[in-house]
Image (cartoon, rainbow over all chains, first blue to last red; front, top):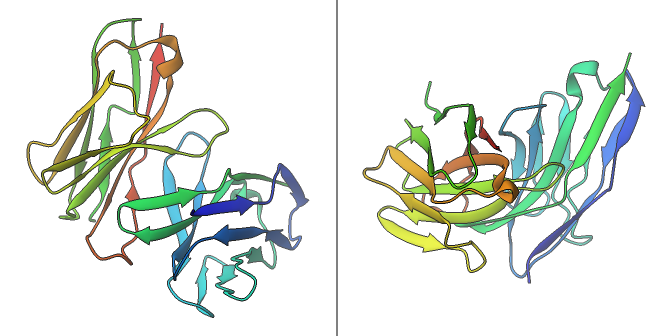
Length: 111
Length: 113
């Protein structure tokens, strides 16, 4: 079946530290992969996506590369800010009607 | 700006008292979804509409119903809320292409007293 395994949190980093949140997936065929971010008390916002192998999604300094050989889509940012504190969800889609989420990783960035 | 709007942002209801949450979209998307998200958990899909076609998830309780009177609006009805139904309810939309992204509204936080 389709599933997403996400690095467990919480993750606490100092401002300007390097961030990696691991995400691996199980799926048949060629899913699309997403990272969503949820700020406290808010809904989910699309952070970035990739729709085929070797694609790199990027937004707001965050990046993730679709690695089919390792079935991974790890989220990275070179220098985190306090404003990046949020919960990050990795997700995959096999079609518009099916979005499978990971369990979420809470990131706290301290000044 | 095209967007997904949810009202109200916070809803308080009493145990067993029916409640309706609303969602509207200006994206003109064919598909609309309702998710339930409990604290510190991933969103859980309750059901979705593909145009007017309703698709219920197998484990969605009968207590949850939905209506989509037109393309722009979709409602979530909870017939008899229990304490366990307190959660954030998220509405999302997408187009029909398999590559289409789901776009989420800000959510309605439901409190059951």
